[in-house]
Amino acid sequence: MLSSNSYLGLCTDTRLKEAARKAVEMYGTGAGGSRLISGTSPIHRELEAQVAFFKGAGAALIFSSGYMANAGVISSVADKNWVIYSDRLNHASIIDGCRLSGARTVVYGHGDVNDLENKIRRYPSKQGLIVTDALFSVDGDLAPLPALVATARRHGLLLMVDEAHATGVLGKNGGGAAELFGIKDGIDISTGTFSKALASEGGFVAGSAALIDYLVNTARSFIFSTAMPPAGAAVSLAALDIVRTEPQRRSTLMEHAAWLRDSLGRAGFDVANHPTQIVSLILGEPRTATTFSDRLMERGIFVAAIRPPTVPAGTSRLRISLMATHTRDDLEFAVSEITAVGRELGVIGREKVST
Ligand SMILES: *Cc1c(COP(=O)(O)O)cnc(C)c1O
Image 1 (tube, rainbow, N blue to C red):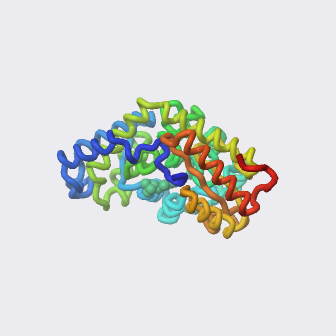
Image 2: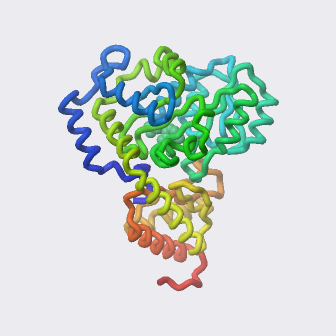
Image 3: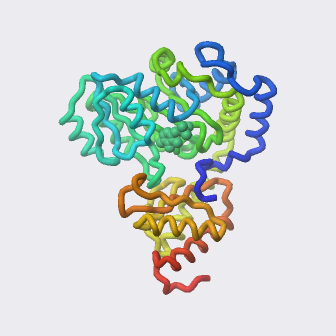
């Protein structure tokens, strides 16, 4: 499995399964109501306290999904008098949040702080928000967060970062890209999901106590939706505990990624070089990518092909995502099969003889 977002390999962890079982025994299955009516259990509050602590923020709020967190937060914070500056490759949930807000949305070039500066000058705002993914899931690259913090400060704008793919993975304590760059204090609004490295379900936002208070009273995807099941909260709590106590999962994951990049690069593939757990193998035409993916499946390897409109024309690819629970044997097998298929399809030269 080279296409899972369960980056730390926790979806099958016995401790998480046990946490879910216990919570079902204690609280039952569904939450039975929205958070502001009857759906709040002590475990929801405990999870919010832990997320705030984990992110080094004043407070946190949980949603039923990461999509709902982004859509709810942006549409609450901004209105038609605002300008939102949004990276061209931001996740759909951010785009939808911008639409829902009614704000003027100005898209800047992917990771391009110069373009962002130009756009801010061209479309100035009294109230504005810069929003970006932290780790872009298709290429596996990182947003230039330190420069974005400086730009936000210079122009008096809020900065919101979606750490969906970075939470639990990047940074010394798994806090995400903001922790990796050492600029946690420069982020006004940090969102993320429990559904990727944390192997659970649900989304969150961390920020100042005033922001969270405001969201509790205005974020429609929080107010008008049933609370996440208590068992989901229990799994998220157990996963955060593992993130804290087992940093070796993060280092193993990054070693895997570096090794895989290096090996595929040496085999002749066009591999983008980013310091993350996502390895994007650019192949070009959509047919090449889908055929490549099918042939790998026949050989026992699952890797999804990503094609337009998800990526620009001519950059169809295999998106490989690694897990801490992969073994070096798994990866060696992957490299030999990917190399074999690459030769079959003429993506890489045939001259090197397979070992
Ligand atoms: C997956 C993802 C989300 C949505 O999270 P869910 O919990 O799956 O709804 C939001 N933003 C980004 C960048 C994502 O990759």
